[in-house]
Length: 276
Image 1 (cartoon, rainbow, N blue to C red):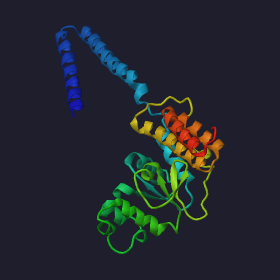
Image 2: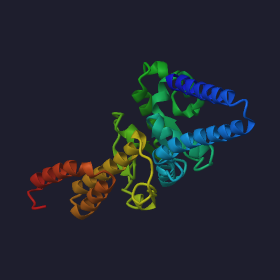
Image 3: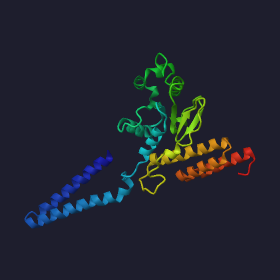
Image 4: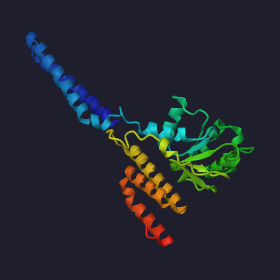
């Protein structure tokens, strides 16, 4: 509001200055026309200078980070999958691609923070829950409501959690890394090692110059952290070569993860007594 008020004052002030200058030059028609032209050029240049000065900061014309984040997730899920999401910044691009661009309409998106709201529960398929009001039954505990959905649906469809959801909920299920998401593991499930090869990273791993903001930085961190966890998964299998590849890939997204990776390798080296 303060910015809008100040912007209005600037406009009124500029108009008053222009009117005053033209009023002083009223006896001279030619001078009035020249002054009007000078004032127009002055105010246009002032605006253009401000716009060009911050253009690189606000330019979003080549920023595909959010689009690629959502399409990477949706395109990697198995048919008729369910994806539990957490947080507006992660859910909005998924909703956009599915509703507007009609990408993967077979995927059911469940936004966990809304599971404590009856209006949202009413929008979900009734077979997600047992009879009765799940919000009241679980005393508005969204973690328990999410667990009930998974329990009733895991035998019917593949279920995934996005990165934020997997690290926000304490669920009694084993999670299998699946790119930047995590799959609720079912008997016979194996790690899909081709997920990352199908991802796009425009503006992240290429030379595209994009404006950065906290949400975009968070995507960089999530990609890197997911690779660190994939590396730890390989370490648990004693596959140090693939673990090293994952760790090196993680640093490309977020170099600050190097210290954490060194700690992971040190812990692995101590537990196996190997010269890594």
